[in-house]
Amino acid sequence: MAQKPVLCGPVEIVFRSLASKEINEKPNWVGTLENGSNIAVFSNSTTSAFTVIQFGEHMACVLGLGETGEFFRQNLRK
Image: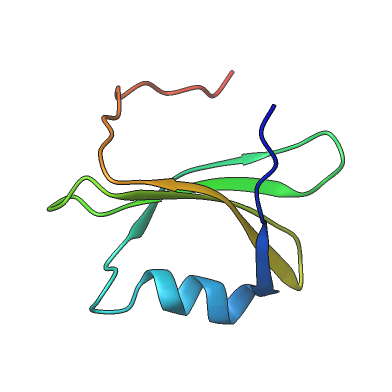
């Protein structure tokens, strides 16, 4: 497995940056991990760019990003 840097910062700043005019990504999926932290997928519906983040109460970390992607609409609630 390749090593990669993980970028982290305060949740409010990370979320605000993703919503900025330059990136324009909105949250499309959020899930809670067993350890209580959350994973979210933000995406830009115009460009198909996306960002995957893990976040808790105070900090958020970018786990990965991409330039193209596709969502399959499905409700995962039990």
